[in-house]
Length: 447
Ligand SMILES: [Zn+2]
Image (cartoon, rainbow, N blue to C red):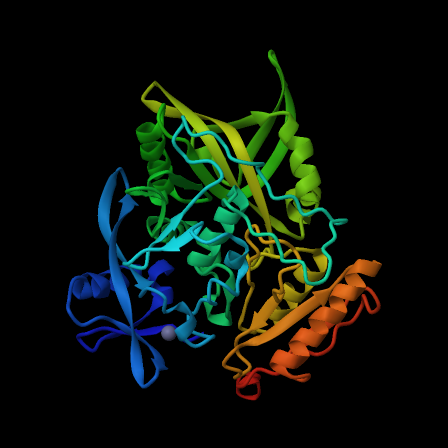
């Protein structure tokens, strides 16, 4: 995936440097020099003969106990679809992706390119929820042909998790990403940058209320403390990480759900939820909950969690202990390598195969959209097709679905042409899938 950036002073750097421990400082220096300059950095994309400019945004970054100034690159307003499909800044038009499942105004792009979202429940503690915690995807729900797909008036926690993942670029994969998705401090910083461009209330970027939990990230521990202390009493916070366990426990006051992220023992943090959450999550996210029942080294899927919680802090022996009471929980299943979201075990197999083949691809995220929205399961971005090559995994075996498959096949044949998209009928042919469309440079790359 091309991610080279040319700075106004002629120097070049790769966006991937932003979360690469070796190059992160050099990248910050390049951005610092470019910030506020009249000429903007550009990627290698050209639209209508013009290079596409990028915005340099100033944020903060946790370093030890201090918040220091940091910078990141962002899209110019409404330019996501103008970038080439394989560019790190490419985003489908909001109407085409999962964001199209919202009513107008739920995700609003502001004049500077940042986003304002209307959440199901605001993060201020006195805000009350509107509607249910998750938009249920009832497998039996029916929609008559021609009936408009319902659109959602508010974003749930799952929708926000998808937005964060997409804005951080974590729904994209190419082989040069390598181990960057295993380095949690880099993950945290990318998420913090994305969250600083998402406003959940007037003058309230999500980054002020979002903390991450992960392995080997002492600065993340400090960031959580700062956010918890600043939010306690007035604001809910959001906690994001790789889920390690969701279990029912007994206490003097009855049963509760104990929620744990990977690496959490360094954070002096406990997360509890009402006991009903266990059944609710099992029903809503069966693949995730099944995986968590297995021993850590036998899980074939990882689970990302976003927890909305009220926090209280106590200080004892100079240690800040944080107690979080979860009010909402969203889960997202991801491939263990690359943390690419997948919606079924079939999709997991395809994601793993694409990663193993060093392919470049995107996983379009559904947000809260109705499942009938036309929406490829993956898009290959290395085939040379400027629109990308859609991939569909057909994995259900019922009559309604068969009808739906025919509709999709007709749609893709018409829009892309019969040979320029890929699909696998996993029900009739569960053991083998058709060969993937070739990458444009596949012959060069295969030694
Ligand atoms: Zn570009």
